[in-house]
Length: 207
Ligand SMILES: O=P(O)(O)OC[C@H]1O[C@H](OP(=O)(O)OP(=O)(O)O)[C@H](O)[C@@H]1O
Ligand SMILES: O=c1cc[nH]c(=O)[nH]1
Ligand SMILES: [Mg+2]
Image (cartoon, rainbow, N blue to C red; front, side):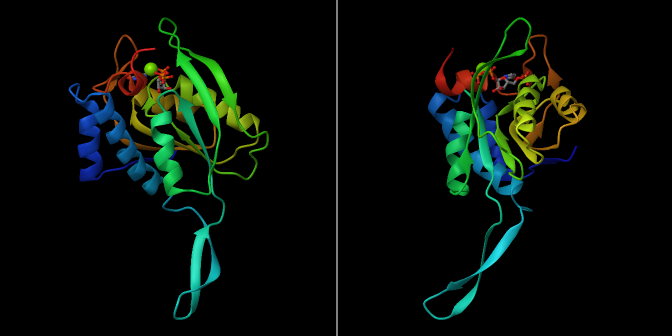
């Protein structure tokens, strides 16, 4: 599986704000929005473009636009904090939604929302979720996408655990990963270490 770790001092500084337990909900949401902008900017760098004629006030020239704007899929709740910035960067994108809550005992994702177009063939999909821990939630989400014909999926995650990277890679799905960090691992509660805590709770408060 292809993976890109966005290595940039400004991204690292924003990730530090997210990791810092002293950052309150508002500071966390602000840093997440800004870091998402950098991750999506890098994720879309090699996307195919098409050319078209455009008139400036002076002359006619050749402009470019994305050949196929993607579908953005935030995984609720935590991915909600990423979708606004991603959509601002790619205003033509469509948006689908998946809602999952990880069971605190089994650590399996429990689905509660699925709002996706029926046919995803030929459409690049960007899944937005700050955390890739065991990988269960991301693999479940990509199962849904592949069942609808998706063949080109990018997982955009702020922090990934090596266990989640392995799970994604072994899923056999057509996915690549863009992240700001691959952390050390998971603790006994399957939280990423050092991580940043619960990305949903840190934006919206405890469930
Ligand atoms: O890789 P996994 O082990 O599946 O864990 C990652 C999932 O856990 C978090 O969501 P959570 O279930 O806490 O829901 P929330 O966004 O509502 O807080 C996170 O946003 C991912 O969706
Ligand atoms: O560290 C983790 C693991 C799962 N979900 C989170 O929000 N954080
Ligand atoms: Mg949570």
